[in-house]
Length: 340
Image (cartoon, rainbow, N blue to C red; front, top):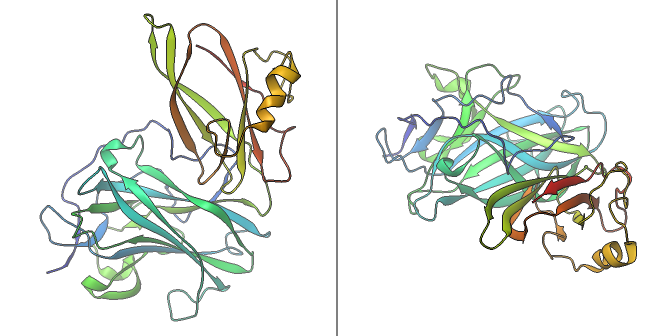
């Protein structure tokens, strides 16, 4: 028998930021008055009141009336940000989830049977919560989708039937207030249409964190770059590290220009290079898909590696956003100097 129940054990929050979180410069919309805190108590339609609580088909919804949110220009949606109370895949330390986006003319008719226009469906693999650096996760779209300010953007976090794969997932929520309702639909528990959480008669409020990250339509973001040193081996003289680009625009090319000369003269493109013909020009011929030098962004951030470089020299990295015709060189910002 299917039962609507809450998780029966607690998961500690790890406060460190990392891959999967949005970088500076991204705009966001949230209907959670507290979109950072994840507290126990999220409701799920699952196999029972005692573990293992494998979820059946569940959807969690929010409807963003862009005009009511103060948006006055077309936006490109880049990623969806949501809380994670607990996630445990039956195999491989991950499980499939989907982000589905729709639009309606404003004012919103959601959740009644007003026709909605599907924008995009993105399937991604949700890592187990034990392997996350934060209880806030960002699911990147493979490409941006444009929404007009006269529309309502409807966000669905869809959980396919997890019983065959023995998957457990509870999205992150809290009771700290919201500006619009959280909705749930779960046919196996009798909620075929999106139903406000407030109509379920719960003892404690459940406000699911389900935010939208976006930028003005046709805009650029300034990519960030972070180096995480894993190990320095004195025997080989090599440093092992990973490279993370954040604040990415899905569908755009990302270039990580590098130089073994430290940048000391300012944030302008090219000043890290003492010999442009030898150091910089060949990098423009790097083929698309050659990570980490040139690749297509399919989310808000990307971690690559591990890589190895000799310990000792200073390496300068300068990330650049490129949409296939235009690149944001002048606003790329100062290069990152990393001494290995």
